[in-house]
Length: 261
Figure 1 (cartoon, rainbow, N blue to C red):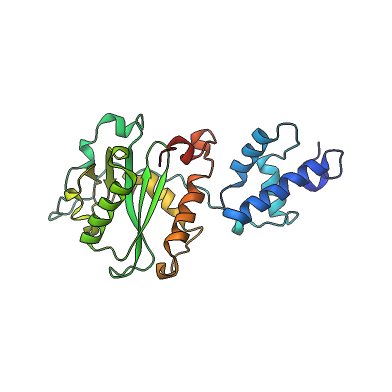
Figure 2: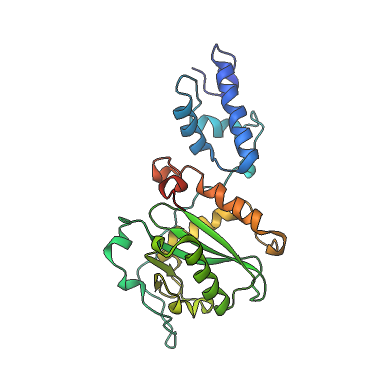
């Protein structure tokens, strides 16, 4: 079989491959759910009788301009962050906000139990009075909750987290790990979940949430004011990410692993 989609399109199964590309383009334009990788696997499962180009073939034909998509248009790939050296950056007067991440139980670290989350804000502009997003990512399923907050003062973050727990149900939140930022200074007061705090200057300790917050930028680019995004738009972003198949989940979706949320 030929290496490129254009060549394959000239053989007897060409129409099937063209159907693949049409399907992918429609799914991408509609809701940004699928990456090339996840759509190839979805397509093979949904249409096993059809021809399907390989992932490298699709990327190669995008790069060569054969296909009507560009890499800049594609959903972002998750980054594999390099873990820190293990040396902690400690300030002499660093205030301890609450229970340290070192006190988390083994089931949190090994991701052997659903219900343990990581959290952080996504900020449009680094001004406390500007609206922001409070995001929570479940460590095992990668389910993402995105909640718009009017600012990221400590009291606002505490009240917003308490609202999230009430809306989704405390039973779904066994623990949540945040960084040691001043906006989270009151989170130890939250009821309904055990709150842990990562070490200062150690974002890799919440790497799942950090990576998934990067995916939000596909929909809300840096520098865009969150004043322009209402609750319906934010919910659409959350739904798109939670219905995106993930390689790390065996190409299942986060929403399929927590159907009650």
